[in-house]
Length: 327
Image 1: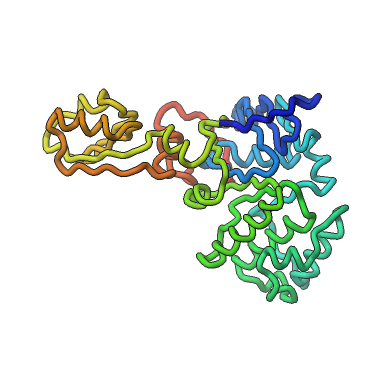
Image 2: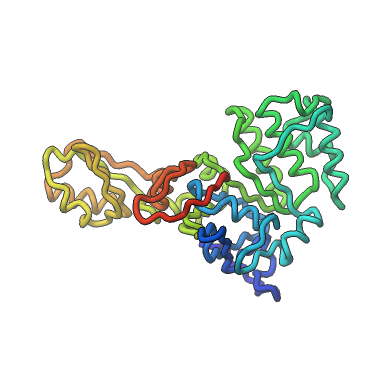
């Protein structure tokens, strides 16, 4: 359910007050269409997780959002204007995975240098504190660990005091404690009314920290809503049972069942109405080893995209996209 703005539309077609608006956006690389007619709006103040398997179009979507790539067709607007204008004005901060450490420069020097390039920067001390770098401010960047360097990327993204923060796999290389500290910092930043868009392969992070989850597949939005809404759409519960030699033919037609998986002599049914499914199984005398559990976000992701997050494989049927995505 894409956020609906109630204050009309700007002349460019984007909803008034929207932080991000993709309007029928397509991006092609030769014969490969990485993004296909994307419609997506992010309201100001939202925290949104962007999910999708490798090759789903996430990298291309983020690159167009940041003004690094022009759309082949359609329009991308940030705060009602062109992405490049929002970036130049310091309204957008990005934490990307790419980048090499700068030799002989301290953490504080780097953050101060970046902040000085913006019209209304965040204080250097504040950016360091939010990123958990207070104790490392005097350390040279080329002598930091991978997790510490990741926190420096976060501080760099914050330096311009942006209204929109774009985070690419922000907790990669962080240990459990550092990951928890990062999300605490991100929530503090978001509570100021700022907009956050982050991509992650840690689905639990998306479930716990996003107001809204957008799932891309083959360059299109295939699900958009809260974690609970996406789990329900993909089949809210999982019912598994031992077949004990029974046929599998009737299973797909049972009430509520949206998908059937067979693993040896055990069946797993994805269902939108577990009570109705179990009653039907009981009528067929198929309740041996019965287990009922709520579907996880990962289960929903697999149902929507046909593969696990982060894997390069596509659906088993008719996949044509070979575009390489790293986000």
